[in-house]
Length: 342
Ligand SMILES: *Cc1c(COP(=O)(O)O)cnc(C)c1O
Image (cartoon, rainbow, N blue to C red):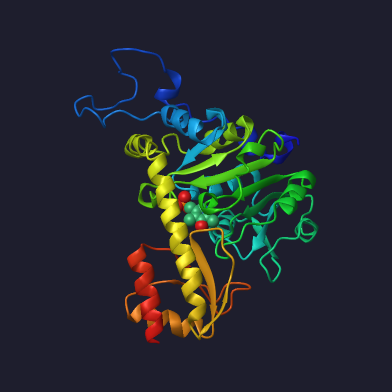
């Protein structure tokens, strides 16, 4: 893979903004370099633009070097950045599975980059050859999501491997739900595949959606390009410090995942007992895609009772489907009891 040929020329050639915190990093006692107000101690100083302390701790948990980690304002930031780094508007294109997470297309549209959807099969499985046949010399990115949202299934590992082996551009594997899955992360394959970018997030299994912290894992060369294009202080100090402490909850997180997987089993057992449920799709995530006989009607009936699920009726291959997140035991029971009233 030739990175220079893949990256937008303007990005490759640009000189990134150099902040005061970039230019002096050593120990000192008098800081008169950043026009900060020295009088409001604790939050008055600009934070570390590259979040090294936090990355050091994440590095230990994810078993990946800090230089291969990018941190952003949710996963949404690296999704947007990868497009801005690699895709020339109105010239380059992106190929992605369909259905999948909506933000890939939103970011492509905002950046005026053609977005090509490739339908999964009826089991929501991926055929690498079909997907690859939609790429051309201007395809810079392929977006894969595994476990996929809204379908819940893991994409076949061999098919992803084939894409990584064959495609000459960048392959993004979004693993937002990997902590709930029966398969391992792709992070360990980064050295083997220099064109691989893995996305993960603190919004799901870590229970920190409100904090807005997403991770991208890739070669140090790709991470450097992200750092070149991102806003200098993209992760504020409240988030950096807070997540640093939350990372101690490794055991707690394992317990949460166990609880949620039990909740998922409960829903998988109870939902088929309802007459209007036609199909439960297999899931490796913390949600279940369910086909019912009247998705719009059922969505409304549930909402009237104060139970909100996600109506996916209008999404490709998901006609008649609701996406149901696994909640607390109480929430799951309330959902099932409410459904039995209809
Ligand atoms: C929820 C989700 C994310 C997380 O986005 P954040 O911006 O990190 O909250 C990313 N990708 C997929 C597929 C998701 O479903």
